Image (tube, rainbow, N blue to C red; front, side, top):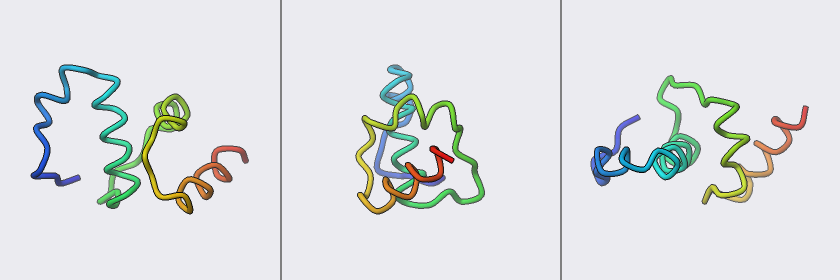
Length: 64
């Protein structure tokens, strides 16, 4: 994942905020070969700011 507009070191000081930010980046802008940690996704799913159609797809996949 590549992101030049965020200070990742500052975000890492708050692990929960960093995890949510990272998940949003991966979901909204592409995985670039990475995998999403299912446990983290389930834990933070309700707090993520993601596209509604992607949210519905992820809900279907998580509930299988």
